[in-house]
Length: 339
Ligand SMILES: NC(=O)c1ccc[n+]([C@@H]2O[C@H](COP(=O)([O-])OP(=O)(O)OC[C@H]3O[C@@H](n4cnc5c(N)ncnc54)[C@H](O)[C@@H]3O)[C@@H](O)[C@H]2O)c1
Image (cartoon, rainbow, N blue to C red; front, side):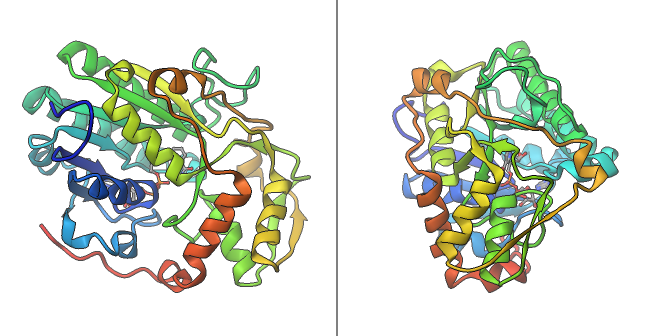
C-alpha cells in the first residue's frame, strides 16, 4: 500500500466521484498529486455533473461504470491503493418508495466491491461514506460511536448493512476499512435539481431564484451541518492514518443547529428570499427525526481532524460558488466518456 504520509503518487479510486462529495474529494486528491480514477454510473436523480470536475478533467481518468457491474468494477479495484466508496442511492424517501433499488445499489453494489477486493486486491484501503441515517432518532445527544443504530428508513438500514459488509470482508480477508458516518453535508458542487437530499443547497437555490423556501412543520428540528471541505479533509486523514483501520467515526460540526436558523442564515447570506411553513408530507414525517448532533472526539483523537468552517462562512462560500455557476446545476450536461 501507499505511504501513510501522503497520497502523492497513490492510485485512488473514487466510486460516485462525479457527484457532490466525490468530486470535491477528487479536486483535493489531484492537488495532493494522487492518480485519481473517477468511477460513476451517472444515474439520475443523483448528483453527477460534468461541471463538478471542471479544472481537473485532464488530470483524472473517468470511467463510466456501475458498482453493480462486477466485471467493470473489478477492473478498477485491481489497480487501486485507496478506494473511496461513495457511489450510492442517496435519497431517503426514494429508499422507502423503491427499496429494491436501494438494496441493489447500496447493498449489492457494496458487496460487489467487497468481493472484488477479496479476490483481486487485498492491498488497498477502503474509506466508506457512511451516514447519520444509520442511527435514526437519537436516544442521547451528542451522538457518539457507541450509540445504538435504529434507522428510520431503508436507506439508513442499507448504509449500515453496507458498512457491516465492508468490515466483515475487511476482517475475513485482511484489508483495512474505515467508515465515516457523515452528517448533513453542504457546499459547492452539490446537485440543485431537487430537495430529496442536500436540503441546504436546495434552499440556497430557492433563495437565489426568488422561490419560497418550504419548511416542514415548525422548523424546530435540529441537524448537524458540515461543510464539504471539512468532510474531504476527514476522508484524506482517515485514509492516511493506520489508527482508523477497522473503525467507524461520525463526521460533523458538533454544533446542533435549529432547521429554521439554517434557513435564516441562507436568507441573510443571499440577501433575499422568503420561507413558508407547510405541513409535513406523510412520507417525510414517517422517516424524519427530531434532533441530531454528533461529537467528533473519536475522529479528532485518531486523526487530529477538526471542522474549520462555520455555518455562516460555509453558506457564504457556497453562495459564492453558485453565483456564476447556477445554470450548470439547473441543466446537466452529459458526462464525457473517457474510458
Ligand atoms: N450529502 C450528504 O449530506 C451525505 C450525508 C451522509 C452520507 N452521504 C453519503 O456520501 C456519499 C456521496 O453522496 P453525495 O451527497 O455526494 O451524493 P451525489 O448524488 O452527489 O453523488 C452520488 C454519486 O454516485 C453515483 N452513483 C449512484 N449510483 C451509482 C452506481 N450504482 N454505480 C456508480 N455510481 C453511482 C451518482 O451518479 C452520483 O454521481 C453517498 O454514499 C452518501 O450516502 C452523503
